[in-house]
Amino acid sequence: MHDDLDHRIIHALCCAPRSSFRRLGEIIGVSEQTVARRYAALRRDGVIRVVGLNSPIGQGRGDWIARLRCRPDAAGPVADSLARRPEVGYASIASGGSEIICAIRSTGGRDDVLLRQLPKAASIRDMSVDLIIHAFGPPGTAGWSAGRRALTEEQLRLLAAERPVPAGPPLAPTDEDRPLFDALAEDGRASHTRLAEVTGWSAARVARRLEALEAGGSLTFAVDILAERLGHELNAILWLQVDLPELHRVGEELGRHDESAFVAATSGKHNLMAIVVCRDTADFYRYLSGRLAEIDGIRGYEISVRARRLKQSVSLIHQGRLIHPALG
Image 1 (cartoon, rainbow, N blue to C red):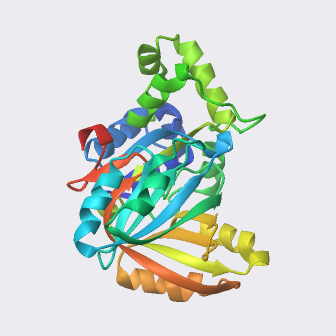
Image 2 (image 1 turned 60 degrees about the vertical axis):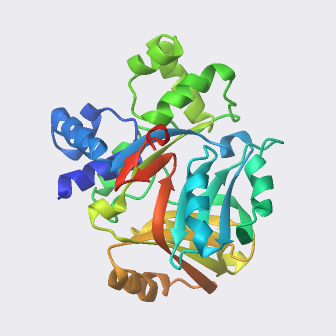
Image 3 (image 1 turned 90 degrees about the horizontal axis):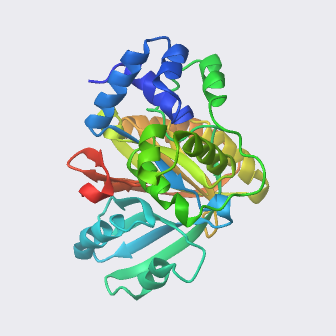
């Protein structure tokens, strides 16, 4: 069972994924060794993975959210196949067993093969693919922080100061950066020494390159968390229709909700989507009829309740654990 300290460490990592254990301990109020030991246990048990990602947004590209409606007998195999594709991030099967929802990272060129192939699959009856236009949420965070604000505002301010501030024009990665990104996809908290080993660079060069890529918007960090292992069993996607003049306000307000794992403005019929995580059905109903219902400007909605989650960011979910795709 995970206690309050585990939740504080998870929340801190969502705010500052690569901050040192020493600094995390100073801010949280425990020893460096305690933070390191707790994090190692969470990672070993497959509850959490910190990963570095090549951000398409920082390079003028974008991500897409796809809803695929399949024959019920084909949904499982199709979803499993999609989850193993490197350009697919979040992937799940919704309740009912015939809808697959996944995020697709665009390469922005002719090699966006998956987006061209999907409509041709015989097992797919219908599909919609919408562009993720803008992500909402508190600045300097990298994911859902275990459903509650475990840290004080002062602690959050100190953690936000640990992250590079995006500045200057976008910085496109080069072929030389590929080993760096591969290593960060395996472990977003890999040390400068470890990254120097895989790139053949000096530790100082690694540090400079990491800072430049993150500040240039090409490198971002995600904190994958297996919410079920923390007592949050219900995961759903809200597809919202919002009055356009209210879109930014509603998105910002949703992004501040503790239940929100991801909120974004999208193209298509529903112009706002929100992935929410709740403890159970009763908790989800309280959220829908309470905080969500109090937001003005929402004209309509649909709900896709997750029946089976297969992938989050770059982590596969296998036997109740987050694992690297190479191990799946």
